[in-house]
Length: 143
Image (cartoon, rainbow, N blue to C red; front, side, top):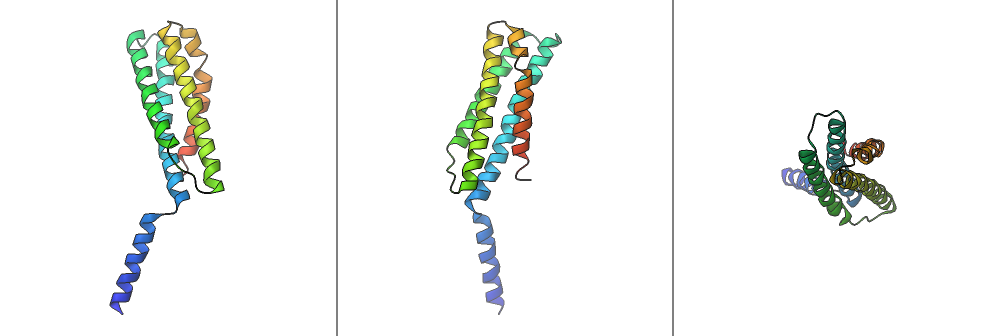
């Protein structure tokens, strides 16, 4: 009797550890989105601090370049995921679309700052805010 209970518990633990493919993709999507939102927020804060004359251009450019590299690495890691159902395919498309928007906005800021064009960087602020909101919504999925 005791062996069958122990065997049953082990089976439940084993199956719970495996998880279904959709759940793993959802959890990965949430983690990636939170990481990406952090990099986009860093970029937004850099532009706002530059606009307020609280940050110098050289470290600002370095911070945005670092955020861009980290964001590219995060997006690349998610792109390697393999959605297995229709629901996970839709999620995959939603996340990759948000990551693409984030990468585009951060890259635009890096280029603008590299050219000394703070006005062009400021024009990305609304996109950065919107992208952060989208990523934050995705980041709430696995909570």
